[in-house]
View 1 (cartoon, helix red, strand yellow):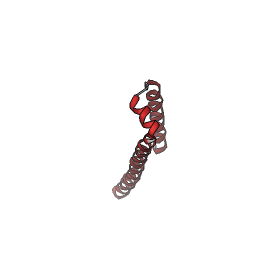
View 2 (cartoon, helix red, strand yellow):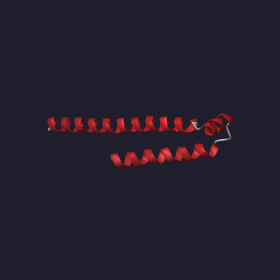
View 3 (cartoon, rainbow, N blue to C red):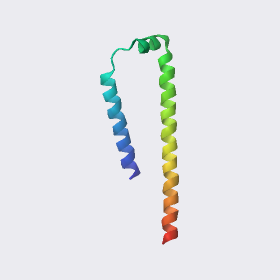
View 4 (cartoon, rainbow, N blue to C red):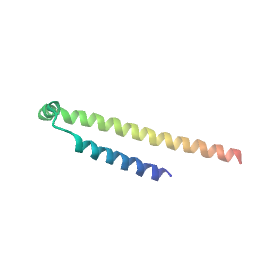
Length: 76
C-alpha cells in the first residue's frame, strides 16, 4: 500500500512539474536572479524544504503503521 501511495505521489509531482514548466513565460525577475546566481539558492532551499517534509511524512507514516499494528494485536 505504501509503495502504491509513493508512486502515485511521485507521478502527481512529476506531472505537475511538467505542466508548470510548459506554462512558464519569460519572467524578468527570474532572469535577473538567474544572472546573479541567486536562483540556485532559492531552488536549493525549496528542495531542502520539500525533502524535509517528505522525510517527515514518511517517518510519521511508519510510526502510525506501528501503532495501528499494536492496536490490532491488542484487540485480538
